[in-house]
Image (cartoon, rainbow, N blue to C red; front, side):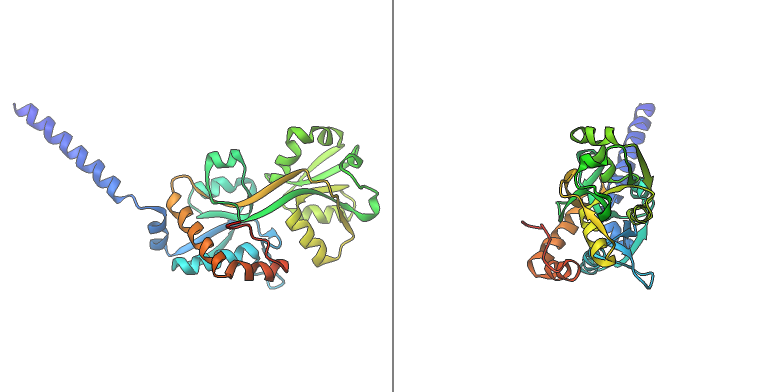
Length: 268
């Protein structure tokens, strides 16, 4: 009888301990508000979504959106540059709260992360020098291609539908970011760069470099915000705030500032 009572007491204690631990587990929104800062992970060489201006301040379309989201959440905001090749690890280890920087939604990434709805559309395009004579993807045969490591541009080149394009290349050279790749294109180190159309068109317009965007896209994409799988509450709250911002005109105003028109696809 004594043994039975002890076993029952042990079981009750274990149940109480497990129950308390479950009760102590906070949802993503509560945990964020207790920390007090919304930390966004980004590649800080990705204009106009997130990059460093002449004063070395991190600015951009995504940054302005995220700052407003943080304000409405009642917390501070921090833009944290990360190694884009290790972005998922940065998120899972808790160094950042989300990946928000032209982050393409893919089925593979959806298996590992909790994504928001799409907020901006994009294409993967080939950028070349105007004087190169390259007008189509096929014209890259036997030439060197630059690409950002760990990017959706790399995924696009690896897609089955683009196998002929990839097979015809002389070499694929990885770069840490798109700006470095474009600089190498400028000096002739590579013959073309596959990158996001959003970044390509903005960079060409701002710098006036004699680059040409080949009309045929390698892939059509949409950008979303990536959160940890176990924090759907935080993702949902951010989505709700973005919808509010779309309805009250804040998103359109930020879009006009960076693109000269409303390019958002939130709620559309």
